[in-house]
Amino acid sequence: TFQTCTDVIFFASLSNTSFLPPHKATFVELNKRCQQDFGVTPHPTEMVDTWNYVNKLNNSSHILFVNGLQDMWAGGSVLWNVSDTVVAINIEDGAHHSDLSHEGPTDQDTDDVKQAYIEIETIIKKWLNEIQVKQN
Image (cartoon, rainbow, N blue to C red; front, side, top):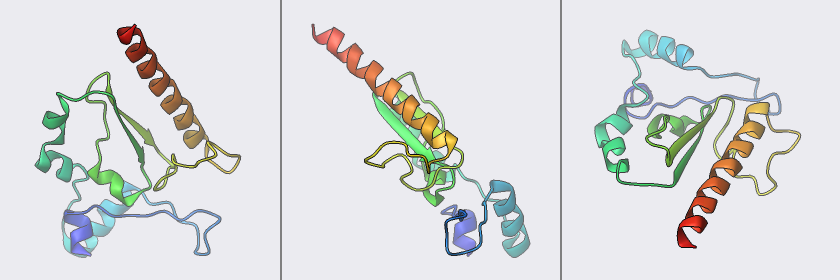
């Protein structure tokens, strides 16, 4: 729809385990479709820019944004590090909630999801250690 090309950037990939044919969505493909169908160019960071998240985050700390870039909601997230303690981890082949498995990474996860788990654990341990040192 027009709205998915302008207000809420929406695209989804399908894996080999889906009952639908596999399909990897990309911003290049989305841009081409939006140009063809509606003559518009998607702006994936527009919600972030419009709502001025970054300025609101400047006085924040210890926030970890984990984004599966194959998730339609990634366009509304913070996709870059705002500071040393407001950090974004982007998972190229990640889907919605790829990082929230209660088991941690499994053999079925992609290499970038597995790497994201390592990064998340490393960052959180570092932050907890820093907090602990300050309290002692």
